[in-house]
Length: 620
Figure 1: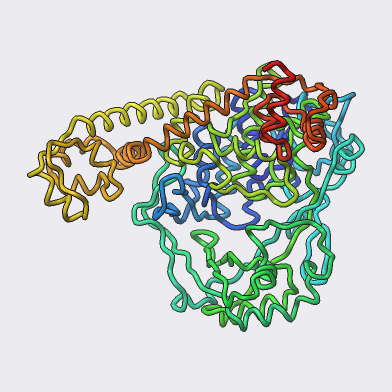
Figure 2: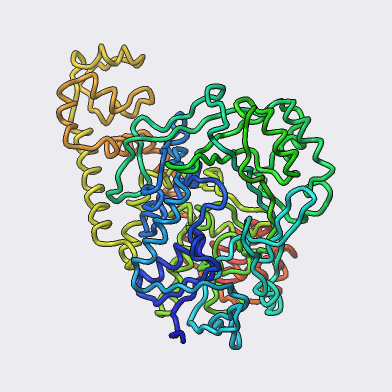
């Protein structure tokens, strides 16, 4: 009935879609297995992509040739660049999306890739021969053979949904949990754990009083994620902001005795940085209010996502508390919020390629690795799809370094440090964040994506053109010079010191008070010289000038650290032979089995002294 596939991807969420698209685009014959063809790429939680650090990840996925950026652009209803008041390393793009259009667009893209086949059924187990995966088993007892498998099961593995005192199996509301895979992996020697996540109630937007809330419109000049020619929005839908209050908090507390979080029924750890509303008012009792973001779910729906009100309290408590929020006095609830517990597998059991150490050609990506968020999942799916294809074609795995991409930081953190709570990406996790800006993801990664056969020639040509334009802008900044009489009045208006001699734009832009736009407005000659350059190219050139010293410092530090990754370690090396290593280092090194000294240096519990001892012992 079935041919033998190169790659079977189990699960069609954000990780599964990217994995299937990447492997197929590179030439593998792919089967995407999902329990429901109508929920491919479903936005199970908030209808948004990007945000702080997450927006950088979406840009990186796009630069490599992944599809999440394009899908986000084609389905967005609002665009905002967050953190513009901070330095450019912190700027993070975010889109509010039409939930149904997002899923529809992803499905159309996948159906447009000839190498992708689909199968709608629960996958209940793996076919394993020796220490190698050779396919999957379905709920109907079918066996489908493949040369590799990528598991992207999300929250479905033995998923349990909690609403107050109610508890029932499910991968998300209205859908069955997946069973069988966890039990088999444990039998094969894998370690598993439980995690928790949650979602807020959805409400009827027609029942809300937006006049009582603060409007949050999109950017005046909306941007986009993809470096390709997706169109920016010409109209946008606003979000709104309101707040809880002490009356809301007191009402919520009446349900604490029936809360699965507080009576011990939920064992899994939830995301620290996206806590439920009951967790917020319990942990931050001194705060009288918490922010609520009122987010529309699409262009043509009245359904609203109540961001900031994630909860597993009983439905009646949720409803009564919502009615006490300003603007929600007459609210009608579509469905309550809930918490979900699910199985995950600590990611220290993975190689840097996301292939498991125990079973060859088995890859894990997304929430099964202990992460939270669409963007984190999608980036892992992309890397797992790329590496599954490369493994089958006898190519070295693609492993991005911490100085190359946020995706590199994410995977490096997971495999070396593990996680016992849902892992979320932040800019603070990236030590080279000035290098890893959202504006230069294409210059960093598109040549690599093109070399892999994932980024198209058209995409590569755009990156080359951008790089050339950037060179020309920087050249123009160095060559165009102002006489004092031409510019000093404008400089004084900008509260910066006047110049005493002919000075280049390049030198003036090193001043934090000045921007390209200000200089353009101060001098018509300079304005004319910039007409052939785009706003974004000029902005990127300005960032390079202003942060030149810091960028150079980070590059030198990255090169120094990367030199440790040149020193390979045999995966079967016996660390117990080195008695000078600390007991913790021996234990951690044996468990993680680092492939290089650089990787060993990033393992939690391995000190610089341990690395020095290891280098001496290995003759490095």
